[in-house]
Figure 1 (tube, one colour):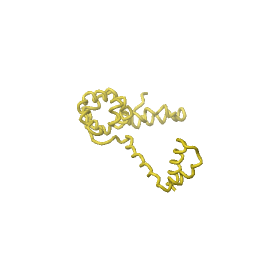
Figure 2: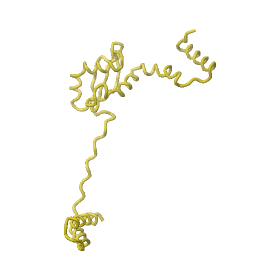
Figure 3: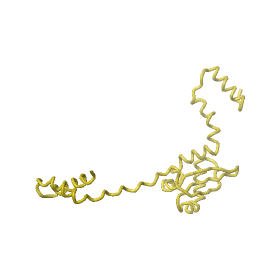
Length: 171
């Protein structure tokens, strides 16, 4: 007897579990995940994971798939693009649609739409470098020079005097 769908399928799954004991998760994972993976949300999640392979690393660094919506004739893929990349992507639209549909295995996308902004998972902008410390004052310089006065003349004495002056000026 073939396994039915809906309530009959649940009953059949229950009969199988009772007859053979508890089922392994691996045995029922396809039954549970198939509806979610066939939805547009599942397709978008799969596309987001494969995005660098679909568009290449250069475009993936400044773009990200954001939303997949639409009807039976093919949906609309919304791509978040930073800066002037939306214009560049508009020129590449036919190729991008073909690549996306090849990756998803069906004619899911018919049109592209672009939204401006940074990728949501992009690296935050780098913090500005810290400001250099202020130069040591005259008092710190003279105290540091007195501390290293016993050393012989040369680059080591000068470096130690500058280091001492910086340390003393921060106190």
